Length: 574
Image 1 (cartoon, one colour):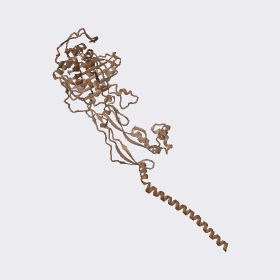
Image 2 (spheres, one colour):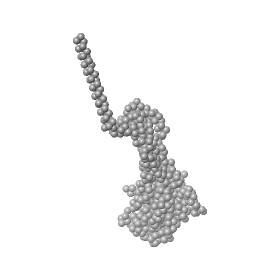
Image 3 (spheres, helix red, strand yellow):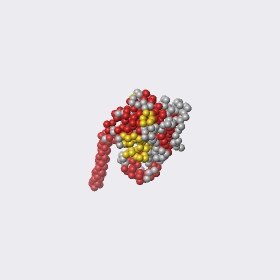
Image 4 (cartoon, one colour):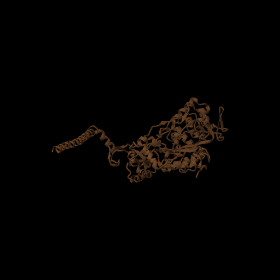
């Protein structure tokens, strides 16, 4: 009996040893779990809560739409239309390689392209797939229910006037930021204020709730321009026809309100369609009316003659000998297109005599007086039109002028101006001798302006400019039926670093109507015309006539000469 009793004692002790060992391991494991739980729940809790919120709750930006640009009557020139942009979470897509071919096909990518994009941004939580697509297209992609793929609302700019107003309105980039024209100049005014929203996502990264943040989006403000869309269309249409007919390189037309300085139309050719700009020459974006300079030629003569009248040394009927059609200033020869003989000052303007203008300038004006007068007219200074990239032009200091430079300045050589500067300068004759600010915005505050010429001189110049736009003047092609028109042609050789080109020209015309009570000022320039003539009378004056005729009718401005019998010259295009 001793043997069996000893056996049971040994067996019991062995069983107890194994049980104790297991219990000890379990107690140790429980202790480690308790320590880990304490670490996670107490010591590491702030970090874990932050990570949980970062992965499940995301603050996203909400875009507001950019402000509208409208013409003076509220017609839209730039509006923002809602679109969607598709994006994905690369971290989530990495876990779902089986869906890559379907996603790539849906967004028009190669599968290898998508794979490389996901791999390159594997540590990010956001990547664009397609930007600014039709919302219906975006919904079709989202209907595939691919994990990590979502969309967000954005806005794309649309320009109803297309190429007609493109160079003045400008355009925005894909991020809705102004890149040129009014869009750039007033970018901060038009830009919306972004809002914030909170998106709650599930374990797969799919949004399950959107909560509005404390800062809702605010749309941009509406910008009201001085532009009249009807006159803008008219100016662009006639300019485009003229540039094509004369095979010119470019052209500009500016229409100003004679009293307020508001820009009613500003057209340039070439232009571009801001709604489809792919593979387009960037030089087409340029607002040539404010960025490009020219030597105006004889369209500048009225301002030098007006200064001579202001000096009191001549009157409109003062006689000037222009025979034999040329005039030597030292070793340099100044020529007219013919021998006009003995003519008065009025016919120096009407016949556009370079010889007459030179003689008047050299005998009645000082260099300093001419220089000051050009500055007072706004030349060599920005017009502050509110448009970006505006050039100031150039006028050399008077102490550097030789007699020949002084003489050629009288008929528009040796000075660089923009078409906008010329248009503004002509408002001096249309607004009683006062130069006022111009504006691309509607209803600018009325400025007292700066007096340049006396009312007497302005009255005399109006009569001369009417004569210049009559059948006996060079501007006969600018006449408008039933209205009195005043204006001046200009033709100048194009210059570059090597000098003046013998057979390349700038043709221009500046004027206003009705001459009895001017309401509109128009300046036209056509650059490098190669067919059907190159004079301002042939290229620019007909554009002035067409645009002025249409604008007067659009604005219901009553005729001041209802029995017009002016005979037009024969230069026309279809």
